[in-house]
Each structure stands twice: as C-alpha cells, then as structure tokens.
Length: 312
Image 1 (cartoon, rainbow, N blue to C red):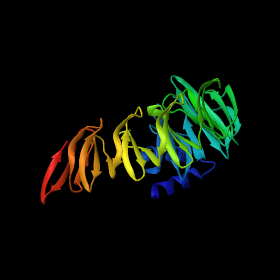
Image 2: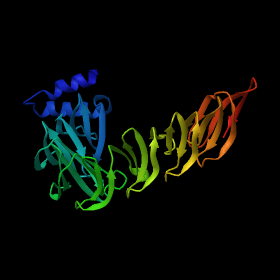
Image 3: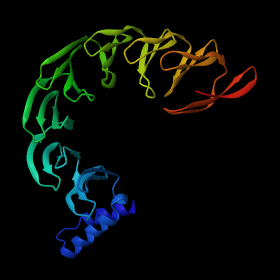
Image 4: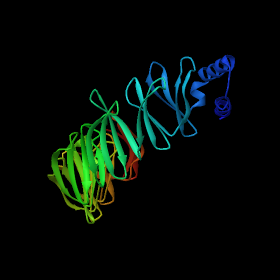
C-alpha cells in the first residue's frame, strides 16, 4: 500500500523537469509488481496496469508511463492497440498511448479475438453493433433484449427477443432457431443450453433439439468434470456432455469430482466413473479425507466399523 501511495503522489506532480521524470520512471521500474494491483501484458514489456480501480499503460522495462493510471477501463485489442474508456467515452489507442480513433460514448465495448481478427462488440441501451479492431463497422445488429457472444467459437451470437432465442452469425444472419424459453443458460463449451420453462429445466443442443426433457427441478453443470447433474423430485442423476443419461435420476445424492461421482443410495455411499459405471456399490459411510484432481482420487471410507483408504 505504501508504494501505491507514493506512486499516486508522484503521478500527481505537474511541470516536472527531466530529473523528476527520470526519478519517477526509476521508481516505477523498480517497484512495478508491488505498485499495481493488476497487470496484463500488451506487447514488448508494455502492460495495462491497474491501481485504485483505474487503468493506465506502463513499460515495465524502463518505467515509462505512456498513459497515466486514470482510465475507467482498458483492454488489449491486439499486440499494438488497446481499448480505453473514461466516463463511458471509448477510444482506440496504440500501446504507447497515441489515440488512433475516438469511438464515442457507449455503455460497454468488449474486445475479443475471432481467429486472427480483432473484434469490438458495442452495447448501449440494448443496441448492439460489431466493429473490427480499428473501429470500423462490420454489422449493425440492432436492438435485442440480450445478446451473448459464443465464447467457444467467437463468430456467433445468441440473441433474445422476449422469450425467443436465436443464434446468429457476424453478418446478423440466423444460424438456428433455439425456440421459446423463460431463460437459456449457455454452455458454449459443450454446445448446449440449460433451458428453463416455468419451474422446470431441460437441456437443448445449439440447433434447438431437446436432449434432456423439461421435467427436471434443477440442472447444473459440474465445474470439476463438465457433466450435468439432474434433480427431479429430490432425486439426482447425471447426463453426459451430449445429454445422454449415464446415471439414472434415482439417487439421494451425487457429488462431482474430476474422475468420479460419489453416489448416495439408501444412506450409503459408492463411487461411479464419468461414463456412469459403478466402481463400488453404495455400501460405505460418508467418505472423508477426500483428495481429488484429474489424475487421482483418494478418500477414507468406513464399512462395518472398519476404516480403510480407497484410491480410484
């Protein structure tokens, strides 16, 4: 914190001569990784840095401050350019701080890569446009209730008008009609959506075909293995990434891990692999001392008063 306070004092100086500028640069170079709360590389040792929720551009090699730490938002566009905003006014600037284009006022602009091409997705009051990395218009999408970028492909978007959801491409043309839902939760990695109709949930593919019927009280994607946990009438099961039921929805509990599921049935616990094959019957007390990663799973179990370790 003391380094940050010193830097703020230094940056507040005006009319500094060469000597003061060199002192400031030397200090920034020496304490670069201590001063800033965040830093993201642009290119050639130049970083987008953050302090006190403000952003700037600084060269970590020599301490040169290209842009003072005073912008509300700053994001890399490519190795030569960044997107910056102050009071919702966005500009494109070079990595050394030269303003190349003023984009104007927006609620938000998101920079991302579509293959080798840079893109800027703009949003203001529900109105969306797509720009290239230089700020030139590619497509005027128009007004939607919501538009979400497909983060797995980066060349298509899910749009919502009322309860109707559709997938469009960068030209704004429809790729597929997903149908009508109260809500769609995208799983772009698996090319699926968890849909909500009333108080029931199901899973659809990105062409709108239902793969898990809308009879579940709840569905969520496991963070540890990417499969879907299903809940119906307080009973649980599992669907794989294609929506195929691999563990029937009939168990009292299911806990997800990287290599296995712990399944509870009749007050006892067993283990199942990610293909739905039971490795042990549900015959143990609740496992303890669980250690899990993508390579190994170990725990301690109890049966008939006897403790022993399991490795799967």
